[in-house]
Length: 209
Image 1 (cartoon, rainbow, N blue to C red):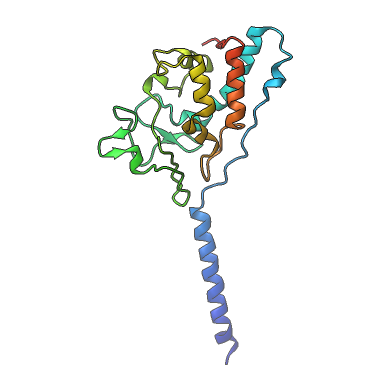
Image 2 (cartoon, rainbow, N blue to C red):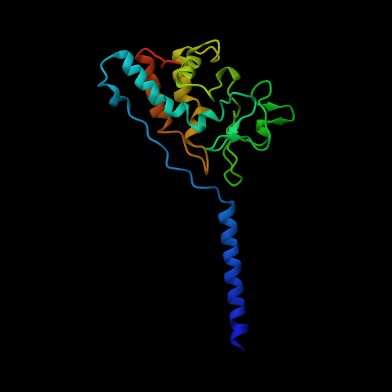
């Protein structure tokens, strides 16, 4: 048997293995950057002036509110955005009357009860867009703050209800478990909820619009 006939199968296997590895590399999503952290509530106790402390707390809360995980579901128009780059949703999707998609193309057509990482599709049982009155994209942190506090725009939630929403709502909590290839919101939902509570307790002061 010639050396060529011996080496041919080995070369073929190596080539095929390389092509498989290349294909996997091409379809695998890029690794998400390391998530940011959040400062603990205790680190704001040194700010003696209540208004200044409240503003500082909300700026820390804003790290979450202005992250792609929140902004993608709080679009300014009728089309959600997606990925860390906040690109327009592909395939084409629209808000619909109730924030759950158009007739025949509801959000739950593709987004199921949990993340489906094999296809890179996020999921949650209540998957939907925030109402247009709570659009955050393109808004300053001060404007977002005023929206959050305005009961005519926030679903008639008072401050205790808002705290519960931020700390306990599992759709909010999805932001820290967004699935493969997406950067989680900074910190944890528990830390975020504690900061939001401290902001409320300090007077719920909003930054200037």
